[in-house]
Amino acid sequence: MPAHDAQRQQQTDIFHRLHNGPEPLVLVNAWDAASARIVERAGAKAIGTTSAGMAWSLGYPDGERMPVGELLAACGRICRVAGVPVTVDIERGFGDSTQAVCDVVRALIDMGVAGINIEDGVLPGTRRLAPPEILRERIEALRGLDARLFINARTDTHFVANDDPAARYQDTLRRARLYAAAGADGIFVPGMTSLEEIAGLAEAVPLPVNVYAGHTKAPAVDVLAGAGARRISLGCGPLQAALGLLGRIATEAFGGNHGHDGHGGGFRAMSAEMLPAGEINALFPSAP
Picture 1 (cartoon, rainbow, N blue to C red):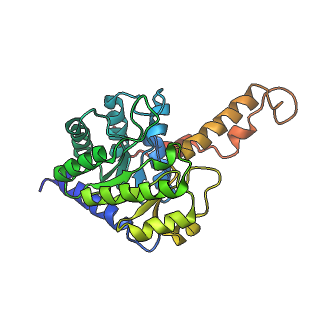
Picture 2 (picture 1 turned 90 degrees about the horizontal axis):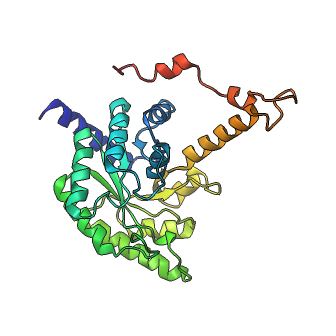
Picture 3 (picture 1 turned 120 degrees about the horizontal axis):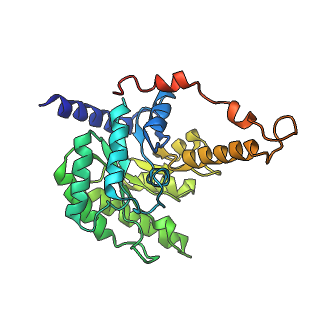
């Protein structure tokens, strides 16, 4: 086996094991190479990308609006610097057909990616959730493409209007079971915040349950773990927080906060926790 393939196999095996450890896998999602290295330095056991954060950082709105070439280029930069397994959020797959989605994932596998998120999502131009058969077919094809790639199947049942919480939960459960049978390795239900529902899903589906904690009212890790979550993702939350800080830095510099001395612009918000340039350079020792 070529060295690159052996290394990827090792990273993929590690990524699978991280979902079965004594503590849940926490992903502080990255959007570029620098954020990936900062997160890894802080103790990340794996790097997950945020599709929204990546799109925003490249100048596109979320929702598969960025060209797939830019997605792959950004993922390639993250894979080049990451020393831990990388999993990539590909939304609905960045392809109009199952074959096109497989082509995207094959490119990611060739980079060394250990896992992906792929969702059923909302049908383009509508507010209706896509039929689960579409994602089922894609999962089956991806499982045939690579036997060990960690496929985290996301369902967006909580992102469409539904006045019947019980019916929504049953639809979530039905889709999760369908995706598990198709070959998924994990189930992700962003928007599911009820600890009772999380516990019920974790008990009913024989796969690690992933929950989203990138919002201001998210419970602590140990609370989510107690409900049965095996993977906790912050998604675009870290970039939203970083952009909020950037806004405060700019406002203060432009004099909006009257500076630290009450006269003109100031730099206190910027100076509080900024990293030295040399420390940041040291994050990339292998860069050409």
